[in-house]
Image (cartoon, rainbow, N blue to C red; front, side, top):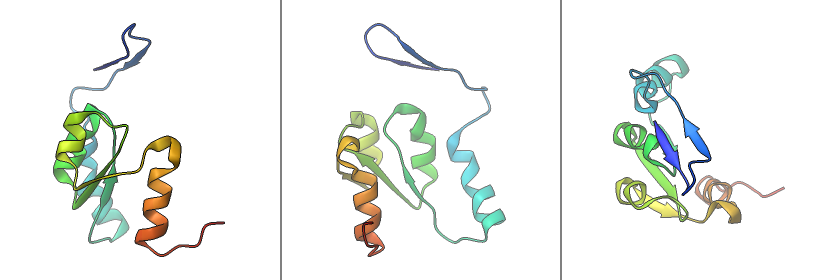
Length: 94
């Protein structure tokens, strides 16, 4: 369970056995891919980061996520993930 904000206006409820990190090997097997890159910004992404080949946190991520990430990228309101992907894979912006 994740509590967000001072007034707890956001509530995430997850099954106790459900973790984002557990999906990595299934994705790799089903999609036939070798490496997985994850993006995340809150505590529920930590298990995913632990399993990642690479993990990236936007500037607005909490400190625990930024510390666990391969690198910190641009803020989400500045399209940090989209910019990262365009630069990393040399994609043209449309």
